[in-house]
Image 1 (cartoon, rainbow, N blue to C red):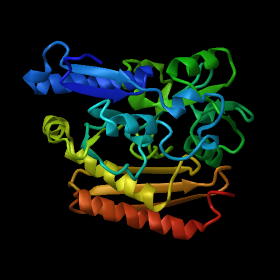
Image 2 (cartoon, rainbow, N blue to C red):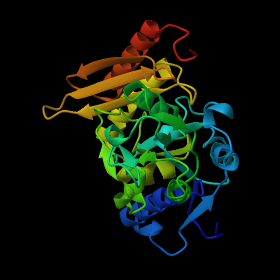
Image 3 (cartoon, one colour):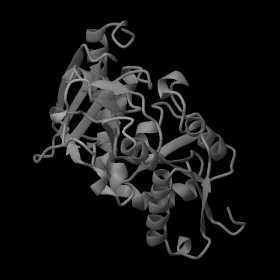
Amino acid sequence: MTDTAKLRIGTRGSPLALAQAHEVRDKLANAHPELAEEGAIAVTVITTTGDKILDRALSEIGGKGLFTKEIDDALLGGEIDLAVHSMKDVPTVLPDGMILPTILPREDVRDAFISLKYKSFAEMPAGSVIGSASLRRQAMILNKYPDLKVVTFRGNVQTRLRKLSEEQVDATLLAMAGLNRLGQPDIATAPISEDDMLPAVAQGAIGITIREDDAQCKKWLAALHCETSAIRVAAERAALKALDGSCRTPIAALAEFQDDGSLRLRVSIVRPDGSERLDTERMIAKPDIATAMATGTDAGEELKQRGGPDFISA
């Protein structure tokens, strides 16, 4: 952080998080001449709980906010002016005094299959091992391919690729959005169709949080906001909130605009062992933020009722 910075951006320190923060910095500089001056925008790296603990599954070290709490504290404490987040890491309820006014245009929502041996799940023989830190991915794989084995597999892109080359696992999965933002889409052996693996809530979306009373930041960020992406994310996050979703809950959701302007929302919950999956779908003829949230809530409540209180703990 410099003494002359007009705007201080907070972010995690992983290569992907920094790439996202730099994307926001560059977009702001392009949109506002006063932010294009050298040193006008500073990027501050903040280490989160999720970054510190790498030897356990996320589901074992806490629920919501593992990758956001320390950044939230810095924002509310005035150490930074805005925070850049992968939206799939952001809890559905923000701390008091904070708002999320900006969603950037959404990237590719698909998961990426990565293997040095196989081209797809279907090619993998029984007993093959897939490494993933995501309970959603683990559960969906087990649901569709019960003969495969999944193990917890954490670390950034480089760490996971090293483990793959060491044959600790036969395959792993990452988000296509992250690979694209890192300029490394070729790492993916193949993207996985959304029909084969429904993405995480808000996968591929970047969100920006600020203090509620910061009118200047709100004004600067308005040029970066994508309303269609925001509507899609709002529908998915409303479903997640209705399901009381946390990192212990295998939940997937995807809202997509159709050619006629309507919005299709799909939501799924899966037992962690893959033994059962429940799905629902909604169409919104004329979507906006309010209708997207209401529809997402309705879809989430339906699945919660259908699954019952023991579904995710079974």
